Structure formats: C-alpha cells, structure tokens
Amino acid sequence: PSGILLRMLYTGKGDGGTSKLFNTPSGERVSKSSNIFEALGTLDELNSFLGVCRAHCAKTTYSLQDQLFFNIVFRLQQDLFIAQAELAGADMSMSKEKVEYLEWVTNESEKNLPPITTFFIPGASELGAYFDTARTISRRTERCVIRVKESGAVVSEETLRYLNRLSSALYALARLSNHFSGITETPPTYQ
Image (cartoon, rainbow, N blue to C red; front, side, top):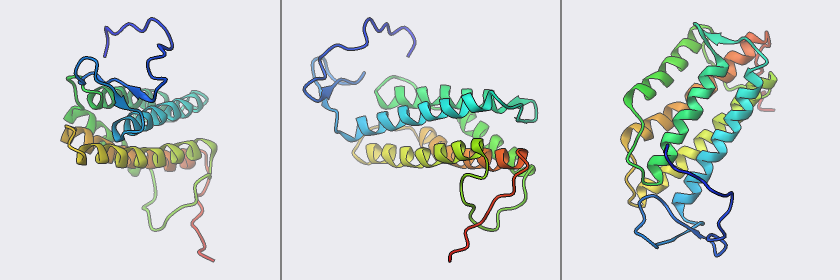
C-alpha cells in the first residue's frame, strides 16, 4: 500500500528462508515456502508478465471501444497490487467494479470475434501468444490463492471472482489480438 518506504533492495533478514507479512504479529516470521508466499510470488510473476504484454501493446493501437489495450493491461496490473496487498494482510480487497470491468473486457472482445467452437493453438500472433501465456499464469495464480484460502486465510469473494474472470479476459484479449493482426487461429488436429 502507499506510504510504505523501501529504504534498500535487501535487508538480509530473509536469508534463513523466512519473511514477514503485514498481518503477522511483531517478530513472527513465515516460511518462504508457505502457500501464502507461493501465491504472492505467482501474483508478482503474473504482474511482471502483464508488463511484457503491456510493452508489446505499446507497439499497437488495438483498443476496445475507446480503451487502448495498453491502458487495459495497465489497469489489470494496478488491480493485482490490490490482490497482493490483501493476501499480505493489508486492509483492502478487490471491488465488485473491478470484477465487472473484467466482464466488460471479455464481453466487448467477444462482440468482435467469431464464436468459439474449438480450442486454438496459442501463438497465432506475437501479442496473442503473450496474452495466452499471461492467461496460463493467471490460472495458476488463481489455484495458488485458492490454496491460501483453503488453509484458513481470509481471501475476499470479490478477489476470488476477480482472479477467476481474469483468465477469461486474458483469453479474450489473446483472441482479439490475433483477430486484429489479421491472423486466423488454428485449431489442434488431435493427430
């Protein structure tokens, strides 16, 4: 959350394989191999890979209505910081409006695409391939966060809904990137 000042890039306190969260009692450390750090790390990985997507979006003028893909992805990256803060114990969580935005991205994308009748092989276009990779990281992130919830941690229903919708929105952006590139998606032959 804002207001946190990081004075250095390392403290050395985690050299023994533990770290702290916002909500851990003073002095209590948590193993870096725990489900919570796996989920936080996977959220960070997803956000970083969305940065790759955004950098490639900057080379295009692709948009949904008046929203450039670049700005859509930046908004998703901002949202993931909220999810990370919530998991780390900060007093914040995803809003219903953020879930509805993902639904809007998916629905608006589908209006520009032929109906899905089969699976498609990822990689039809460069940007589509990046979004497909982000989609798979998003699904893994959702599984990690569910494990955290199942271990007894508090994770808001809106955050779970957001993570569930995120992979759909990224799939829609991958397909739309292929479409805007003028590339026909290829289904698997199963041969």
